[in-house]
Amino acid sequence: MKHNGQDYLLAIWELGESYGSANEKGVAERLGISLPSAWEGIHRLERENQLTVSKQGIKFTSEGYLSAMKMVRAHRITEYFVYSYLEIPWDEVHNSVMDLEHDFTEKLLDNLYRKMKSPGYCPHGNPVKPDQKMIEISASEAPEGKYYFVRPVLEEYSFLKRLLNAGSTPGKVVDIEKGGESLYLIGENGEFKLPEKMEKTIRLKSGPKSAALRKPLKSGRASGKLPLERIKVKKPNEPYA
Image (tube, rainbow, N blue to C red; front, side, top):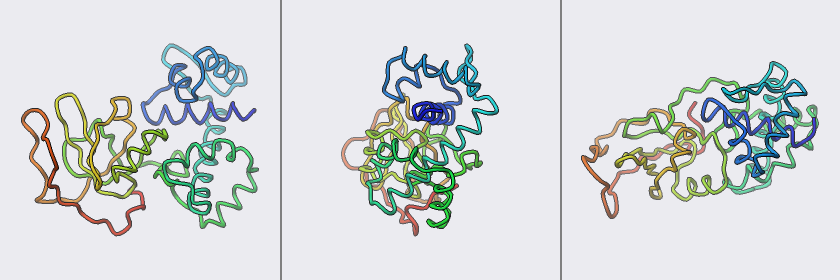
């Protein structure tokens, strides 16, 4: 399978994990290519018995599922490597390994993984074992309140940068607040409105109980600074799974 075929499998896995399904349009947007190019690549993988394509979306065959698992694992191990040893910034890690992840043989990747003491998660909190069961809730389903930030399933540079600037990274305590139809994520450095398409991709875990929890706003949004007490976490970069 060519490298770009592996990139398709990674994109389809991420979309499926984020939204429950994937389609040609989502793959095209994820890979930054035209819809006809995505269609061609997807149906090439279908002919190679990696995928099935129907009106219900794109699904992995048994063979495709195993191929995707290997690709996702390689991606997340490589992310951990460049973040921890090459000091690539957290928000740039995903894009930086899109070529490098293909260069490791399976044996070399396994050796690298052991040398790094078998990390369980990539820097974004996504599990190195892609089928690992995670105890979490999506931001779109979460009631207002405090949570531990678990992971952004869909690793998109501009969005990761906003998360980083807001201080919303794995292990940190964040707040979810709703204002009308909008959802706001509040981290230790500030808040921002979650893009609607990203609400399902943010995963959280029940956070600490605190008397500092704010009451839900009855209408509109508060203006100015939010005097919210921040709770320190002993291991701010450790995912909560």
